[in-house]
Length: 162
Image (cartoon, rainbow, N blue to C red):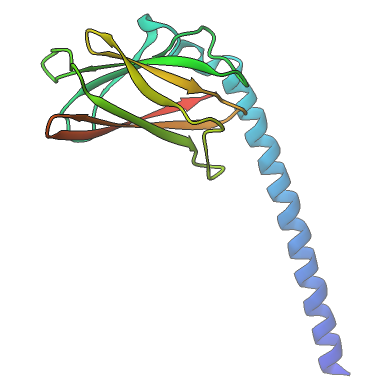
């Protein structure tokens, strides 16, 4: 009888912890969604929108200075659109004829882009068109660029908050 009561109490306790955990998880999801909606409606708008608001950084091994901006303002949601990536040497010389590859997605959701974006068109003066991007939901996105010019290969990662 004692073991049955102890087992029953343990099962009830385990159930209560599960219910509380689910409630806490649901509240965290609601808070995260609300925060993302706030971000979507204001915080990101100055970043990445138009060439004047391009985000610039050095690549991971400091071989390139890389700028990125969306070709539309505001950045579209649930619509395929293009971006421009500008690649220079650290001293400001445009990088010509580089091979640029893109991949990325939503790390928090553990999925890639809904489309297969690519970088194929060289626009001149170190600029390349990033074609076929689509943000299909609000949240944190990452764009990973691998840049290869001759024997130099480097990466740049941009974090986008939609």
